Amino acid sequence: MELILWRHAEAEDGVPDLSRELTDKGRKQASRMADWLNPRLPQDVRILVSPAARTLQTAKALGRGYKRVPALAPGATAAEVLAAAGWPDASYPVLIVGHQPTLGQVAMQLLAGQAGDVTIRKGAVWWFLGRERAGEHQVVLRAVASPDWL
Image (tube, rainbow, N blue to C red):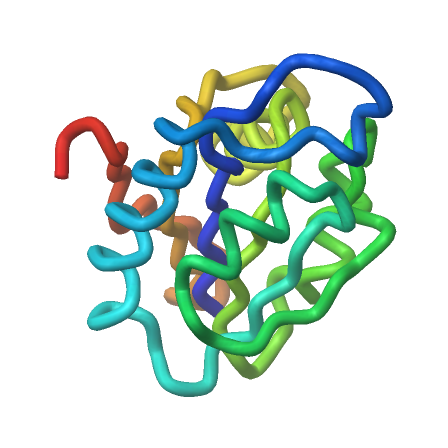
């Protein structure tokens, strides 16, 4: 299974939290990352997005259909994100558009098999592959990309 974690791009400060929108810089970050992602994403990818305005705006830059998933809202746990994605058993690739620190906690769980935090920059993507080898489940980090590098 492929699992792609995409942190929302730069957003305005303020409350209510779910209403915060992308800044001009954030819209550019989302567009740049979408331009990089689109030719690389598998055709059958399922895109799951937090209900926050900033994640919906980030996902919209892809120009593809997506599903709003309340379980991915700010404050979600790594376990909730992995369950929403169907990790590691889904038969299709999943792109999650979400938030820190949750996405960093998911990345740590996948990389190290334990709780902890990894910093994922605003607008960045971490792309994982789960596979079975010699009867053992393995996780491979396929790519890390930041909109500032593209």
